[in-house]
Length: 287
Image (cartoon, rainbow, N blue to C red; front, top):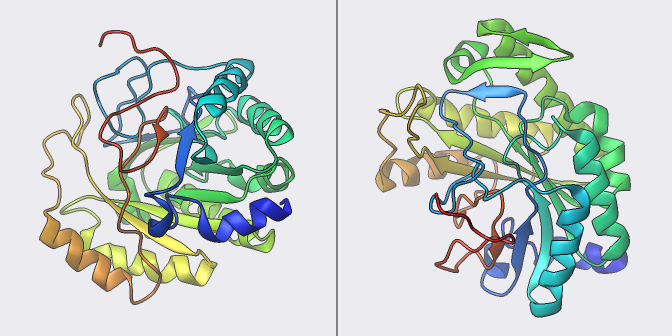
């Protein structure tokens, strides 16, 4: 981590620090098309310009394209503090594409913070590579710490060309997530836990997730209300109310600091979190 990165790590990441979100922006580079987990709430739409949620992008960029687009963006904006890879799939399902992009960004712009958002399944084998590529912040999505709850959330988990289901899948993912988060903290990276709040499935379980995340050493937790998505098993599941979210965050805050300003960004998001437009870094086709 460079000296400027080290200063910014405390102050300028808009997703980790609410006070920075009005001043500093982020850019997500959508270079990761594939995912090694099928969640029951997820349907990745690569070419949709009109839907603002995680897992959506206007198109997939090659690593060289991503750097070129970033260079053009930085010529016209001076408020970008963070470059992240957050999909539309899992960045470490395509580790070569992700690491090539991260290394190029860090080499060209060593003052920028670099962030990766992942489900954690493949993370243990790439911690050193991420740190060496300049990554300062990692978000790991943890939706359950008990396999009997996790099996309701994950349809399949695929690792080393083998696909798992049910309790076996949920247990494998949990073990890998714990290993990853503990390993990230040993390397000195800043770690945020994302948890999707799924009414009737994991809502009462979230304080336990928060407690476990604190034991692992995570720095903060972001409880995200479900966005029901068409053509998924959870498309008819009602999202939690604001009152429910406030209660859950209060209970979880006993164990770990909470993030309250998340905007559930697209995989090609650009700019300030408070911006009303869903601006992306590549031209938008019709959707």
